[in-house]
Image (cartoon, rainbow, N blue to C red; front, top):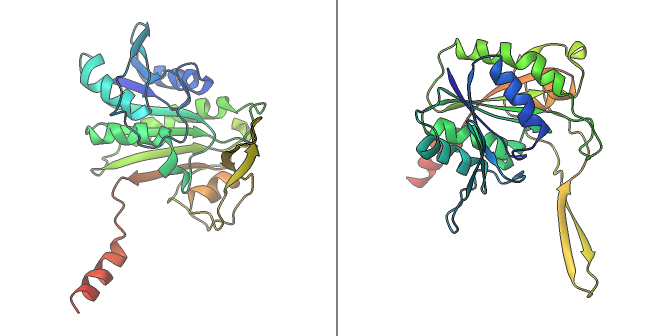
Length: 254
């Protein structure tokens, strides 16, 4: 099995090293194509207005001056002699659950693999707090991911599905179970802005996340992660709100 790895934290990220260990537990044919620098929050961004540079970092290992989507596109179209059988994206430093999925470069890398018709999985390791000094429990993702991926690959997937795995911020022995979940949505907005002033008196802004938990319902990825369970969520790129679609169609005919 040929596996392509990417991420959004960059080619030197600890999470990518963790993902490589996970991948090598499944196959000895592992390729890496990841951003040269961190691309967190870039979503499905693709670079159209400037050229991309590719740096060969070693055998089957490439760094790209672009986004996770760019990396998967270049790897599949130009850098690999044959298409991969599996795309793994991550392991992200911080979970990607709820509405995070629409911002996430980690999820975007997997979505681009799916767009090529390749089975693709996003992996993220939750943190106790999102600060640089917090050490992620990489050993948790590494302990559970190979078996979960193998079990997923043994099943038949429906077209257009991407698997989103999130590991709780706990040591492996403290993880309670693996739960198949749906994507949740937080009950309050966690994005906030902070206005600052530069030395010339001009305003500038930082955008960030509030470190506050929501109150998600049972069965969601958010609830699973909060309660120490591994979350496995099948995602797809179709954003149509199908229940309202029928209502809108009926109202449009009136």
